[in-house]
Amino acid sequence: MHSIGIDIGGTKIAGAVVDEFGTIVREDRQPTTAAQPDEIENAVVEMIERLSEGPEEIVGAGVAAAGFIDAAQSIVYYAPNINWRHEPFREKLESRLAMPVIIENDANAAGWAEFRYGAGRLVSDMVILTIGTGVGGAIVSNDRLFRGGFGAGAEIGHMRVVPGGLPCGCGAHGCIEQYGSGRALERFAGELADAGGIGQALADVRTRKGALKGKDISKLILAGDPGALAALRQLGDWLGQACASLGAVLDPQVFVFGGGVAQAGDLLLEPIRLAYLENLPARGYHPEPEFRIAELVNDAGVVGAADLARLHATQR
Ligand SMILES: [Zn+2]
Image (cartoon, rainbow, N blue to C red; front, top):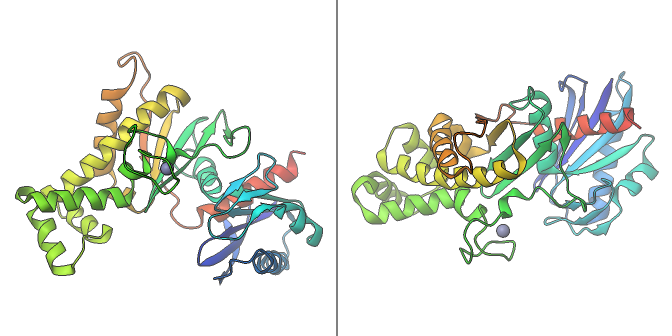
């Protein structure tokens, strides 16, 4: 049984036919710089039609995009990159396509793929944090994707960790995105470079390149540079504190970390685990969750969207 997953990103639309084991059978992608709803809609419809032309029986299509999507997976309330405001996207797609369609927030779709086929596949409850430029994520509770009553839940990056803290792009202050993201890592590294001492190698790179970017910091982390490792520990400490709060509420068996910074592997997980234990309520009596690195790197959004579409089409 096959379904189609589409992931609308900032620079491209990716799509694939996916089987019930999460394996991509055929894929398609096209660049897009379109911000107009009509152009995006046409591109998505055309891609689904192209992908449907194979021998497989397609039971439905799932479309992932950044933005707030209602709990019924049909209306995009708001999208940051596309001019969608209360856009009835599912209805529009279903009126043009001969199959059921669902739409899903892209972080939720990618998180769902990790739950079904990656690091969360053996548990019922999982929290995934994606550490990129910002902090994204998804929550699976009792084998279901948690969306909230309005569909706008699981915005993990905007959980407040510092009252009156650094201003965030969302308009609030002190969100974990400002302390646990790739940008935060650059900031911590910059502060260590300013201080000298163990930050000397970071300072040298900054002088040579004019700025301290994530890639250079990653290289130093993997080379065992004490300054870069200290910056990573700072980041892990914040993330571990956030996980303790999330754990107190959601009690997942596993926390999964994805995104570019997660390539540091155990070097990132270790400080997260330590900070988690230090900040966990009822320490010593609470079963300890596992901390893992995400297994699906590419195409998680496409695979997750396809799987959610298949479940939707077969369970109604
Ligand atoms: Zn925020």
